[in-house]
Length: 444
Image 1 (cartoon, rainbow, N blue to C red):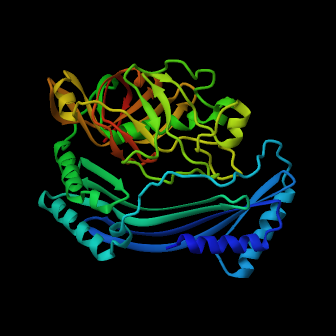
Image 2: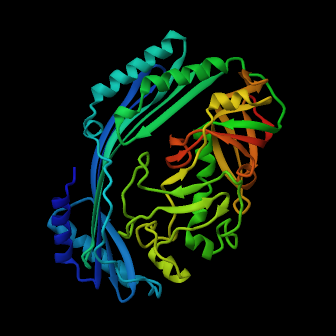
């Protein structure tokens, strides 16, 4: 694994060979392993390690980047020359700012030794337990158990030095029956927090309780969205909170910042320092990440800004930029949505007729400015009547505006670290939403 001193040595060599006006080195090191299982057996074990050096050169207000995974002297020299040659071919960028100087970062501790050293044998033992759990009820299990380390070092010729190391782990499982399925997933910097047996039990329950799913007619229903379903919907919203997206009028928030667009109970912030979050305390330019309140009592209060965007819009950089050059600008990537005190069970008991949704998939934007999304339910959709879950239902396609949905939130559970399949991890609650629009049924 890359250590700070080794990263600094690499950067010294970059400076030795770079003749650019300004030079930046983005150095990453990864070590990642996974055990994949399906049909109640392990079928894949992989592990990989890698180290990448990406050099950005600036010359005469032009910039470009070149990368290599070779760290001998000649390769470092070549990547410096390539970055400079590419920069000279670029048009001059009048908005390009000088690289930032030294910064101060608030420390975050996201490295867990057990997660870094988790062995294939330990992963296999956990998977075996999950498969045995499936066998007790005649189910078929499939999923992934992974762990890894990720190290980032960012240095530049103006004296900036940023370094971050963290671990990751994930357990995801699907339990299959003839006509039904159940799913559960959790990620964490620490593998000790994954609770694989609990996740296997949850997936089994979902599969068994949704056996022999029944048809229901499409229409508008009260829905209880578990956190994974909430996450995969909200993930389509947050690139719109970038300042550049608003300035370029490609954001649904263009001309609407300061307006109350959502319900009074909607409060969302970006907060890399939240104890359930992950990630480095600096952005792709090396600027310290700030906590930013994005939505307060339904009102869009702030956007996030990279340095160049902040200068264009008369704002202060918030530490949400991506490595330069890029066409995106910035985005909040550590979303925390405030929840409530209701449990999913409470929400079910308070529902006369509605649906409980485990998760969603195949989500696509129909209208990016009205934030109308379409997609389908998956792996555990249930009919609720008179405060009880009655039976599984066949999956449904939805066609739903996020603006309308976030104005129809009746109740929320406690916010929790959540992982889905179509968006990045967030801290979000389960939600009870009225008038959620299902446009058609599916055959399964």
